[in-house]
Length: 464
Ligand SMILES: *[C@@H]1O[C@H](CO)[C@@H](O)[C@H](O)[C@H]1NC(C)=O
Ligand SMILES: *[C@@H]1O[C@H](CO)[C@@H](O)[C@H](O)[C@H]1NC(C)=O
Ligand SMILES: *[C@@H]1O[C@H](CO)[C@@H](O)[C@H](O)[C@H]1NC(C)=O
Ligand SMILES: *[C@@H]1O[C@H](CO)[C@@H](O)[C@H](O)[C@H]1NC(C)=O
Ligand SMILES: *[C@@H]1O[C@H](CO)[C@@H](O)[C@H](O)[C@H]1NC(C)=O
Ligand SMILES: *[C@@H]1O[C@H](CO)[C@@H](O)[C@H](O)[C@H]1NC(C)=O
Ligand SMILES: *[C@@H]1O[C@H](CO)[C@@H](O)[C@H](O)[C@H]1NC(C)=O
Ligand SMILES: *[C@@H]1O[C@H](CO)[C@@H](O)[C@H](O)[C@H]1NC(C)=O
Ligand SMILES: *[C@@H]1O[C@H](CO)[C@@H](O)[C@H](O)[C@H]1NC(C)=O
Image (cartoon, rainbow, N blue to C red; front, side, top):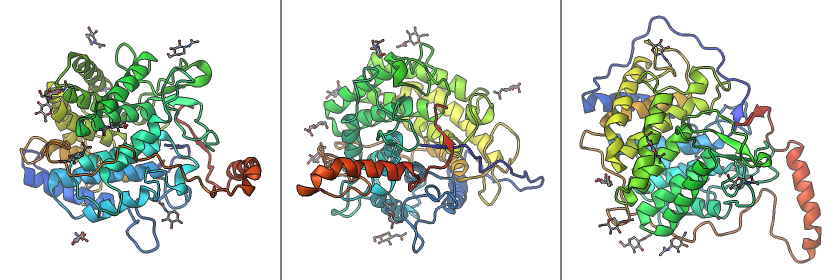
């Protein structure tokens, strides 16, 4: 994940006279009709199904003339669209979704590290696609043909590649933000909650889906590290991360909505997997309480960095975080009924705020604490609004719970997925004779990377 420093959305014009989206929040048919219009508007940002375009991605870097969306946000889009289908039963975008995920899985390794993007790959970027594959398995989304990669195996591939990167050399554990030391954006020396939290989240969900306790043991280790190092403080505030030079003690205290979102969802799955253990129950209760205070200060969800102007300037990435918080909290209520009522109350209040910020053509704005459309639009803002509508269907009796391999799940897994060596950009297998030159080749590659063949636009990391 990267943050563009240049705000693409610095100017917008609020229309004075607009007709709002008409939704009766107590009528599933009305909510579905509204969601359909908002989903169509969201999909207008996607061009990967047009001739000559790359399936799976939203327009953006490295060609940032096309748009502001990084690779990871494509992964987030397809998770949102899988939930769109799951909640509404509208199959209209399912084939696009299937193709997008399979394309970006990155054959032949199929671990969401396609060479087009690996030079600047974050563990969190890969993880967002991995969580989407996991959701496809849990929602029993249509399976790809047998010779394509399968949802569960993709999730396992992401988990396994990240388990191999779990790094006890520095800070006694955790995942670095960036995968590669040559990351042109920096961030290899930064261990953050989102990367380690996604790993925790995937371990918890794989444990429940496969009933393989090894995943639960990893998830427990990851949680204990994140909390032990202080990224989850004693009041359950979630800090963004810290640098290894300082042994992960110089906390960047920015609070982004996606961090508690991945953690709460993971806690929900661990709670469910352990049949409601007090250990996980205590943690999910406390983190839910604090997250509702910080991110729903007056009942309606906010992204503090964007809406309070406190710690950092708002970015394209951050415009999408509310949507994940909403969707993952909603899924958590199915895993951990003990937090159901407090979460759903906050989500329903938020949905009413979101609806006020949508026009009748399904274009939605960003800040839901106001009383009208604010004109601040983008793919992230659309995902947020769509997510807010979807959760109104969560308890209508037509939406199932996440399945497991024993309760109707049909996705094929592979516990060893992701063990193939990574294909790096420009690396080709070396013959014996070439190996002496390998160090030079590596040096050349690093120079090429650093000298800007890859996109290196000016932007800030989450830590700066
Ligand atoms: C999706 O793909 C399947 C299989 O190719 C096809 O039968 C179906 O008609 C497609 N659905 C849509 C909505 O295009
Ligand atoms: C990688 O980039 C090439 C050239 O733009 C494109 O054809 C291909 O579809 C891309 N692959 C992925 C997985 O993005
Ligand atoms: C899932 O269940 C099927 C049988 O229904 C079994 O063949 C398969 O090994 C199971 N997979 C996992 C990951 O447990
Ligand atoms: C359980 O998961 C671990 C970790 O990925 C794997 O090594 C092991 O083979 C799995 N066991 C089974 C029975 O699938
Ligand atoms: C570094 O941080 C880890 C994790 O919090 C801790 O276990 C370890 O004791 C610390 N090392 C030093 C030298 O302070
Ligand atoms: C949860 O309960 C089921 C059914 O009683 C049992 O088979 C399973 O082992 C339990 N899981 C754990 C992690 O204790
Ligand atoms: C686990 O999830 C299932 C499905 O939603 C639910 O019925 C069950 O009550 C949950 N278990 C616990 C301990 O909350
Ligand atoms: C959860 O919060 C309660 C009340 O503040 C506190 O007593 C308890 O120790 C907390 N549990 C954990 C695991 O942090
Ligand atoms: C919450 O509402 C009160 C009263 O309307 C207002 O003063 C306050 O600024 C709001 N807080 C936030 C964080 O929006």
